Image (cartoon, rainbow, N blue to C red):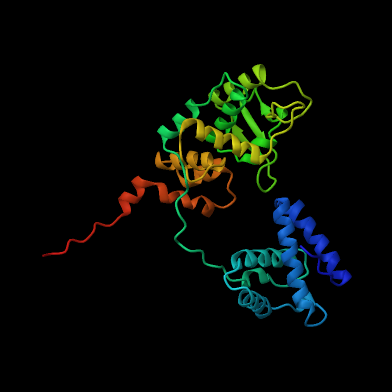
Length: 306
C-alpha cells in the first residue's frame, strides 16, 4: 500500500494509534496494518479540506466520509471501512483528542442474513478421518497429534503452528496458548487422548532439534511448521480417508468441534469460551446447526384445503 504523506503532527498521531492497536487493543499484525491504513486515508481526506482540527470533528463529517467512500466504490467492503473508522474514532476519544465519543455516530452496516451454516464433518466422518491416519508411518504420529489438537481442542492452525514445548503444562494437564488471535493468552485443558498423542510424537518421532516449536517438519534440518502446513495436514488426512469436504483447511475441524457441541446441547456461551471468541455474536452462526432447537421453534406448515 502506497504511503500517503500527512502533516507531521498527524504522522505522530498515527504512530500513537499504531501502538494502541498493537499493544493496547491486541490486534493481529495484519489487522493493525489495515486499521492504520484506513486511518491514514480518513485523515488524508480531512486534510483536503484544510488544516485538520480533531476537536472540531463532527458526526455529519464522519458519516459524509463513509457515504462518499461507498459511492466511490459501490459494493466495496463498507462494513470493514466503517469498523476501521469506528476503531480510530474510539482511540481518538480515549486518548483525549476528541471531546465526544464520535465512534457511536458510525452506523452499523447490516450483514446479509443468508450466511451459510459452518462446514463440518459428521461424527462418523470425523472418526473415519482420525482412523485413516497411519500412526506408524513417517510423520504419522505428528499428524495424528495435530488432528487431535484441531478436532478435540478447537485450536486454530496458527495456534498449533506456534505451540512450543514449554506451552505444555504436563502436571496441570493443560496447554497455554500465548499466540491466540488478538494476542491474548489462552488456556486449554489437555484431555488424555490428546496428551497421549503428544507423548507418542515427542518420544518416537520428533526430530532432535533446538527449535522451541512443538511440531516441526521431518526435513533436514527440521523447520517449524506454519499455518499453511498445518492445514495441509488436514487436507492430506481427508484424502487418505476418502472424504470430500467443502472446506479443506484446519478450520474445518474447529467448526466440526463447535457444531458437535452445539448439537449435543452445549450453550453458545460455552462454545464461545472454548473457541476463545471475543464476542458471542461470532459464535451465533452455530445456532444454524442446532437442529433440535430449530425443530422446536419451527412453525408447522399450514395445510391448504382442497
